[in-house]
Image (cartoon, rainbow, N blue to C red; front, side, top):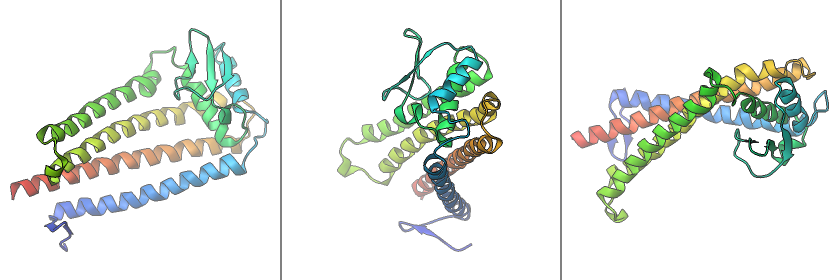
Length: 248
């Protein structure tokens, strides 16, 4: 295999294979991101209305009525996504572009947020995959990533004294944090893809509209999975290069 170099360092055969896979996956992530952006343009700004003339608030109310969730739906700029429900005030908040718009993308956003709220009362597998497990991955990724960054800073507080190893620790730390968040997103998107459509199946939305919502969920899930694989390979690649450089 031809010798590739990074800053004068010649990659081994295994490192070259990983590098090639990283390049391929990076191209795939780019294509998927363009696809997602195109879907957002089409289903948010071209398909601006749905067959039932629902707003995001209307579809949310349909889901809440179907699941016997009695709350007051409010229009609000400020809330954390998937944590829209205020138990004390018995209110549920949606941002203006989700509350009042009627696009297919809005139907997808409103339905997934409403579904997540309806299962917060449960303690089953779906609750864990959407709330507890993602939180666990984020905590683990955050602790691991911040620890590596702190290690680099603790070893030398002066940035002028930092060498390749210090910066590599920081990059690896950021990568681990990002991996934790992305893995969390994969689990959440998978549960939404499998469970949101049955909830809105009888809402009156056409089969074409339901298929479009399913397509958006599926595309997002594939994108998240590829990003996770790519970031893990990039982390392995950096560790391998650093280990081989240190051993020479």
